[in-house]
Length: 314
Image (tube, rainbow, N blue to C red; front, top):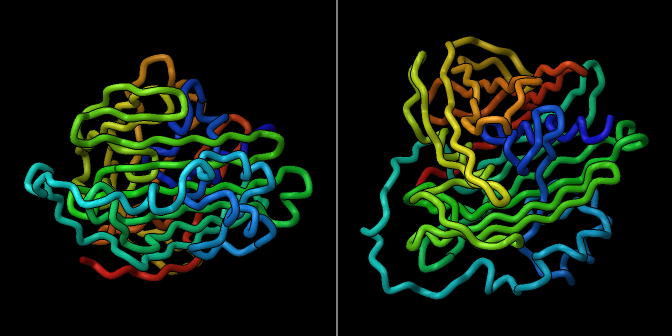
C-alpha cells in the first residue's frame, strides 16, 4: 500500500498530477500539500481538521517546511515592478475566479478514502502582478487514516492575466513519507529556483497545479491535443492533454456534460505506463473538473465532485 493513495489525493490536480516528482511512476505519484505561512502560523494550525481556505492539514513535520524561511510579505506581496504588463501574454479566462471552491470525495476501489478541496482563495500581489492564490488540500478520513494517513497541501500563485505560475510550494504527508518542495519562477528571465537549485525553463512554464487551471481556460476540441510546458522538481515534463470524447456523467454534485481528457507525458522512460489518468471537465466555459479516474494494476482510484461554489470571473 505504500503511497498508493497518493495518486488519488493528487488526482484532484488532474491533467498534470502524475509528474509531482522526478522518477515517479503512475502507481507511486504523491499527493499535494504546502503553505505560504511562517512556522508560527503552521504550528498554530497543526491540530485542525478543517479543509477551509486558511487551514493547514499537515502534521508536526510541517514546522520544517520551507514556508518558515520567509514572512508572508516576502512570499505573497513583492513590491511593484517597473516592467510593463504588456511584456506578458494575456489569456482569456471565463473558467474560474476568486472564491471558487471544489470539494471532492476520494475512493480507493470500494473504500471511501478521504476528501480533497481545490480553492481559489484570493487575489494577491506578487512581483507587481495580480495573482490567484490557489490552495489544494487532501486528507484521508478516520478509517483510512488508521492504516495510511494522508494530510497534504499544495499552493500556487497564478498570474491573473497570463495564467502561468509565479510560485509553488508543496508539503506531502502520506504514511511515513514526508516531502516539502518549493519553486519560484522568474517569468521575465525564464528561470526557476527551487530547494534543489536553479535551471532555465520555457516562457510561461506551469507548475503541477497551475497547469490544470491553464487547461481550463483553453478551447477543447474532441480529437485534438493541447500541449503544456510543465516543471516539477529539477526537470521539465512536456505534457500533452488529449481530448477523447464528450460524455455525460453523474457525480454527487450533479449530472454534467463533459469532455473526457487524458494527460500524456512526453518524458521518455520517466512515464511507465502502469496506469492511466482520465479527467472529466465540464463542456462549458468553466471546464470544471467533476470526475477523475485512475486504473492501475493494483486497483482503481476515483475522485468525484461532491459540492462546488463558482468563483467571480474577473
